[in-house]
Image (cartoon, rainbow, N blue to C red):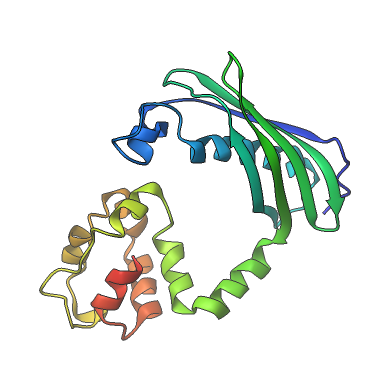
Amino acid sequence: MQSIPVGAKGSFSLVVIPDHLASRFKDATLPPVLATPVMIMVMENAALNAIKPYLDAGESALGTRVDVRHLAATPAGQRVTGEAKVTNVDGRRIEFSIRATDGTEEIGVGTHERVVIQLAKLSERMKVKFGWRATIATVFPVTPERATLESQSMPPKSCRGRQLALCDRRALLKSFALAPFASALAPMAQLGDLRQAVGEIPHRSLGRLL
């Protein structure tokens, strides 16, 4: 990591679409305005952009704290811009002031903290902590689609209680409705790696993890 100067700035913007609204993102009983978690994501991305130029190859920066007030509502179609400024650097720990606007007014303000990490070291820690589950995560990345499937997916009846190597892979993919990941799983070699990684793990366990 290079020296990160206090005062370094970054920004990030997006146009609010229906999927960003509280009524879609969180609960249908909420009004159709920008969801707070989405606003925070915009502000966090601005903070990351502020320090990206100072990160070395193989480094990133994970968010560890956020303290934000959501001040005003924003409808779909508006462009929301997050702005961040480095306020303190303590070794690998970076603090920011953050704000968000929607072209009309300030809609959010607060503070944020990120910690610079080595991606390779984080990967090793995940393997130690979660073992084979970390390998599963590399094949089935965490995405909004996967998050939606977590509470819906169940193994096919023909696979329950059987080993992964004995189950028809097409039935497995269909049962998990993993169309978004079909291209990633298509190569036989990659599917073979997944089978080898999970070995003798029953499908019921795999279903809970995915």
